[in-house]
Image 1 (cartoon, one colour):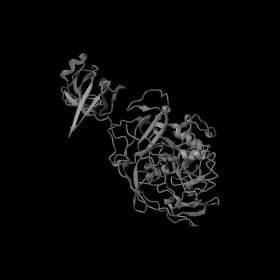
Image 2: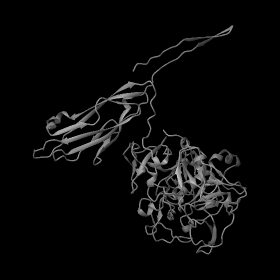
Image 3: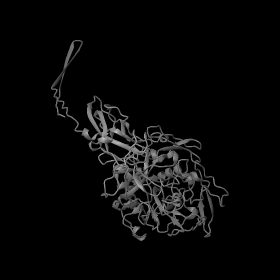
Image 4: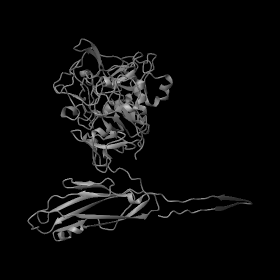
Length: 584
């Protein structure tokens, strides 16, 4: 392409009005260049499939290799289906595809018929994808003594065609219709993945269905280590050693208020039945006007989304771990260090640090993805989604691994009825995330959900009330600076100020509340959903804790809430959230 410049030197504009004449002169220089887009890399293959899945697109997306099943009978066929996409925004393309036997295999033409569904030449406009089918048919019985192979090849030639408008940005094709536009935002370092039941991670083909919230299959993504052992592409299995962190997408939604949460007292007995119910949820994007209900039966767009005006957010799939820790004690480090963040299964949960160090580590983890420590309302958004028809719709099972390893679940039959419950490290008590037992500790009841929201470590969240007893390490100036990333509660709160809740934070809405004795002869405050611990913040313990500890038994759960000083405790950890603003 030749580079051309056009210069316009002067435009003369004369305006006359009545008896007064005015002359305006504009002198300007207009430079017109060309976009140095490499068109040769714009038309690529984006999908390739055979009946048995033996098709692969190479790393530059220019070549497809495949192998057919054996053709033995007349009229038996082998089919390759593929997508070809024009990723250019500046040019349409005229495409020609020619298919046939390679030169050394021309003699097989009497046995094989080769057809291509795309009739050449065809136009592929900017950002368009077309599907082609290459069909090979055995048209004559092969009567030789030994079976053999023949090779065919198709050559695709794309010539650019000029446009007079800019084409749409090439975008990910698959969108879940039930999300109403609240689909995952994949940008910066996030890699979309699918996860097999055994935990094997595959780079997702985003042209195809890779998540389905209607089927409780939540979207997952990973961030790779700085120097992965190889460069990955769609369809590749990603080595666990090359993964730094896992995240799960929480789509924006509105929910029907089921309880206004106006409780200030508790009942000194154990409830005979639970009133846990399916939470009614409807997904929406941030282009839809928010619902602003405040009363039971009305609809409210969850505040976790409106706070950042996003169509969803990514949540750490597991509690934040400490990179390099090989024992539970080595993961107890009170420091701010974004380089130690690791969010993976079977890692030691990072504990024993102040809320300030948790917050600043999470905040600085990836500013381009607006990373931060999980807020109390964001915990509530995940908890509510888990208890809808799109999630497990019951209480998630406790992670009772006493070594604080992430992604574990209590084995069936272990006693979790009263505090303290059964915890441990061997397989008779606890099993990992990628087992039938492990799935029960996920917010979906399968491997695509979020783990460690019941048990594991206590998790501090970014929700607090002003207090002179704050041991978090924050200065008052910092609390003001980071206010967008903190849920602030009323400074008159006490341990039963449930009416000081924020709608959607999964605290006061879980009433009525109860106060009764566990088997250790201590009375505790509980909610009416799953008897999870339910204690509000107060002046001497102003920071919210969520989820419960590994030995908390029935007290633990995604609807558990308690409080802490904000200081260092060896049982307290945290979780990360990403709130990217736009789609690629």
